[in-house]
Length: 196
Image (cartoon, rainbow, N blue to C red; front, side, top):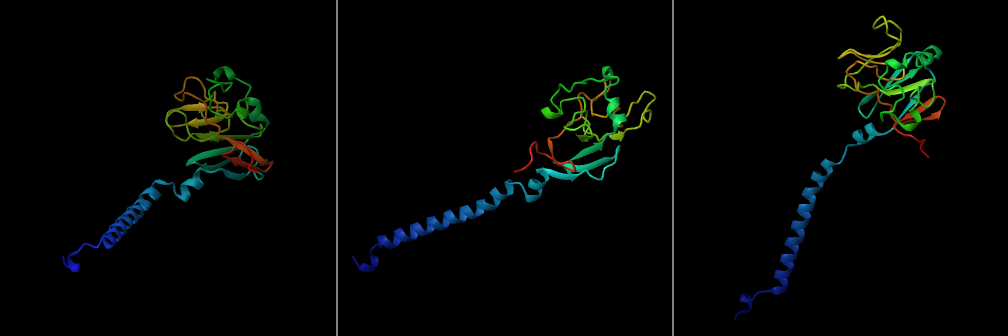
């Protein structure tokens, strides 16, 4: 047998190993964009994170709207008249004591808030997802209207704590998102505790 006709086993093993290694590198390189496409973008991560809101410039009766997780969140500065209205006509409300889980435990009270002054709600109707309007003035919607939030899509009504009235399509109160006061002038929406 001629030396040129013999099989070089070392060379064959090297070429086979190199081919397998290059194939594995090619498969891994092809998988990287596929796996990366399944991860959330930086914008998505940011949109789901907590939102800081300054409330120092708000006057009584003012409404401030910010976006959190793609939903409008309302901050309402309530005065004494608005707070006093929360105790009247509670028999007209479907869930006056907020027993349905639509708020963190610290907001399961008549004010549905940590502090009575500021009401913080997700501004999405619990019926079909429309956006109600803030209508604080009594009689502005109907003669018996005490003030609150009115959803013109299907006629749902909520009081100045976001509690739903009986006899309307919305089944439960408006949602209270998690939030915490960082100071008297700043609220962090989307977290129940201040960051450390």
